[in-house]
Length: 374
Image 1: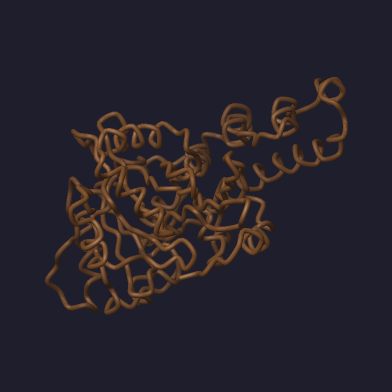
Image 2: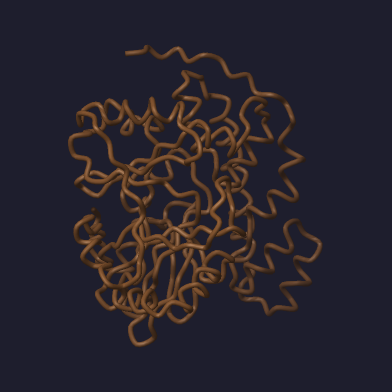
């Protein structure tokens, strides 16, 4: 895992990626998260940490380190089932169909719960309210923060349904991670850590196959099993892969009638990875899907760049002068938001104003892949 020594070091490693944004969370905290992901966004271990990692801007320390970005089995060359060392698997976990929530601990202040992007999201606030009613869980989160580690949970609730329905609100502990080194505690360490704290760990999956057959076994099982999202597999070095069932994927996004605009919407919703993994696994050529994805990313980058340049050029103007100069120009609302020091919601603007104009209802033609089958 990647050791992160300071905010300055981290910023220098990721600031060249336009799709990764630094956000001021208040109280001296800054966070890095990708706005949208393309094929090359997560091509190094620094970028893979940009899923909401939080720093204390005063001292440069990591104070909240959620899960690093990991991928589906068969999604990338490195995660092709035959390229993974299944003998190094340490955990196979139930993949719960919820929202990742993690602790952020500010020394002298205490902890808060954060989703990938914010403390104020509906799921983060619901989870925080749930924890406030449970003293043992609250004290556990405080303890983890004081140990310079991050507790990472999955939040599921009846009113936060994605596909699977969970009848009761629940916060399951997925991992505990050391803030600086990024090391994930082992299952044995987690069991010892939660003992007596009324904190429930995510379920582990048992299996009775040879290690070198585990990946193939799960792939076959994913074709027929119903009622679950899938699994997360962790290796000795801390890296992970995910594998979702076909039952879940087909319900998450209908894929039998795939249109250009559908793909663009999936990119905006950050749901395209699952679809790509399934299509590739079925031997489908996804060139057209990738082309639409690239267009969306390009259009979003151009939108953000136009706003950033306009604001940078006139940042010295007072508010009234800036408004007068730009009120009749394109993207005025986004520019004013940026000028006032807030991050514009480019994806929301894109969805409202660009998606229907530039992306048609043309059905994509998906042909069989020409790749050789080993």
